[in-house]
Length: 244
Image (cartoon, rainbow, N blue to C red; front, side):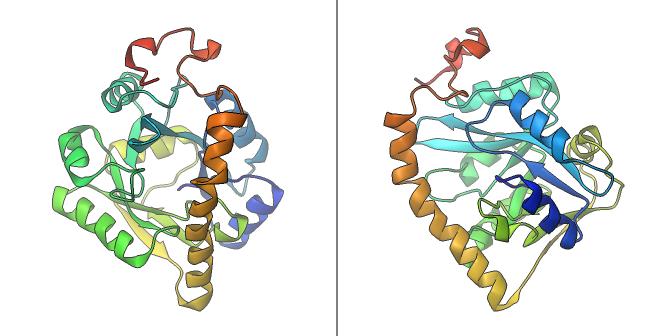
């Protein structure tokens, strides 16, 4: 909870690592497409839960939010308050990935401001360096919010490096959303050792691509993103909270 990549190899690796479910939330992909992929790769051994990591704010000052249990698509590049209001309208579980990471996260003050509308804070992210993960844990602890852990896998080899274990059975997207909203007890686990550290460093290094060539491609070469609030698919519903 969660991964950015999904194919047969990811599913095989997740099963080999003993996972029962993965949350699939790729960047800049609309919910119907995510949901279709999740259904395609789910089977009796592995549940793939569709979700959206929404980029709120502008490229220079964006805050990520992970929403599980959405019924309708939500675009990127809308205000933080606009995203929160839409998640609340849909009754989705609202999670904070990698708090206080560079300029792509909610900071402690942001999380504190919305603490009554947040259902979990990431306390271990395999893409983060140890000092960053310590800051994540402090945010959750200081604000008394439940934690969760994830591989945040942009690379297939990172799937299963960190996971969250719930006390209840999770058989569907609705089960997971309910467990999160209701504050179901959970524990965060991660692998350790040199191999884990190398995989984590590879994930962190991937940030370099995301924030250089990947960003240039997004901004200048790809045209309007399918998750841009002015995309025709959203029918103007988010024009009043769009930041672009």
